[in-house]
Amino acid sequence: MIDYSAFYALLEELQAEQWLAELPQQQLENLIPSSQGKFGVWQALITALHAYSPRSSDFNSDSVLIGQALDISPQQHTLLYDTLRQFCPWRKGPFSLFGIDITTEWHSDWKWQRLLPHISPLQHRLVLDVGCGNGYHCWRMLGAGAKAVIGIDPLLLNVMQFQLIKHLQGKNAPVHVLPLGMENIPQGLQLFDTVFSMGVLYHRRSPIDHLIELRDSLQPGGELVLETLIIDGSLGETLLPTDRYARMRNVWFIPSVPTLSNWMRRCGFKNIRLVDINQTSILEQRRTEWMTFHSLEQFLDPNDHNLTCEGLPAPKRAIVIANS
Image (cartoon, rainbow, N blue to C red):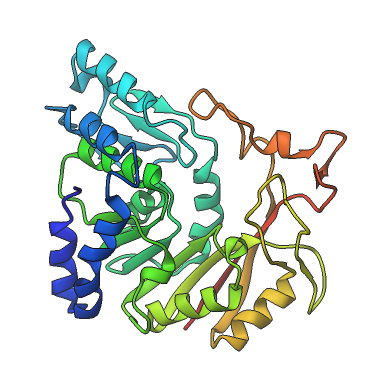
């Protein structure tokens, strides 16, 4: 099993007894090898990476950097490359690990560049990243000065990619990724200074419930950074795909910005402000040697990239910031 003792110690320090009591069973249920067939394989691959000691790390560069090629032997380089390939597909990034550049499906650094000028400084803040993927943004949040960062993601591959990166980093960095969904966070926790929910809202059958969960995880006056799909439109307009959206089955409600703001207001958020709207390009989300499956270009109308292959408005994303 993954060693979360440092995370448990953090919860004890924060006096988060309710969550601390629930976590061991939650993790046991999500990491049982019989239900997650590759867990044991991935864990063994990580454990086999011995004596990788980076002389330096940089979490403020566009590509999260851990170590240099000269820090390891040619044999270690070959082993690391072969191991990283076993964890494909790599969707969030980019990363540079001991000189091996992982060009991920998403240019997650571009999203970070769009939101960073608008959020409250993260220095000394306790941060939650909901649906964090492999933790790319968690490392960027740590680089921005966060006291500690907790990421949650229910997909085990994402959790294990993070564990591999943290293993290579080698130090007891205060960043953790748990195999959980937002519904596993205790109600009314009111623990975090800043909560990020990026690329999650439209996957929830009840966006209102998700917003309430986010609100209740924040300390009073804490900051929510919400990034989600939106459509052009006025108050009350929402797209509910009849089946798939950009070939995704699990897309539910895509609101207009006025509708999203109204949802947030009804859920008790204050000081709601739109800070960015961006139509996702095929340069930001694309196939690479580290993610060889279909990506955004294959999900759009080949004759009009303003439409999905289903004839719906192409992915457009908004970043909205608010306080609890």
